[in-house]
Image (cartoon, rainbow, N blue to C red; front, top):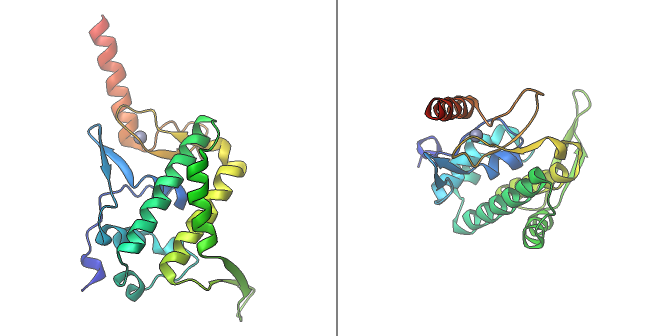
Length: 197
Ligand SMILES: [Zn+2]
């Protein structure tokens, strides 16, 4: 089977930090919630499409061997990350259940950095876990840093009508998860104004 033939579950790829990108694998189409990770194929395609962003090497063989247990793991990590990022964006405390779930993923695949042989100074991230759990462990660790570090203040839940995505407000004027949301929000405001007058 060719990994490139795997179809994604339609989750948007917005170039957000990986924890937000994974959380956004729950998205909405015309106001209806869509789960973008319902099959092993969706999970493998999501990791394939993001693999250049991981320190863990995710080769085709590792992704083709992805199984139902990996699917359950990525789904539970996605749900925990989404809950924690949303709580941080709203300035509320993190629900204990999501904290416990996230920490399970962190502990499942401990990693360390080694010094690489040259040329030039570089590090290699290593883990005793298999590639897929190691990659999920990386996202879990990054989630811990995201919701406790300086970027916490920049986490936002998109306020466009019908959007459930989160984003990092990486620009002072950024208001939406993407340009489509800005256009939809402007159209809704315009409709509201013309209806009232
Ligand atoms: Zn949006």
